[in-house]
Image 1 (tube, rainbow, N blue to C red):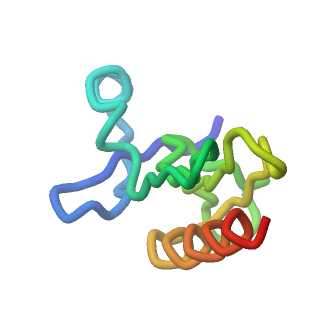
Image 2 (image 1 turned 135 degrees about the vertical axis):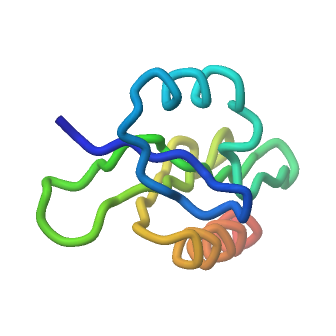
Length: 100
């Protein structure tokens, strides 16, 4: 079973082994799960905490996903382990959308 995570008060992921707390946080804080979200024309680039470790159990946990919605690159996604890497990836996705 994958490990579960929530964002702490500083916006950093922290492991949450209390499934009741994790479930409540996931249901009640959909908006705060996004660490970056921007519209460019008809497209949107969104980066969020996935809530669960998406790795295969080897290496660091994969916790963040950046996705382009709508437009030429619709549904293109990348995954990241850290908030810092996710925000850097978000910036790259913005460049991809801006370049057409």
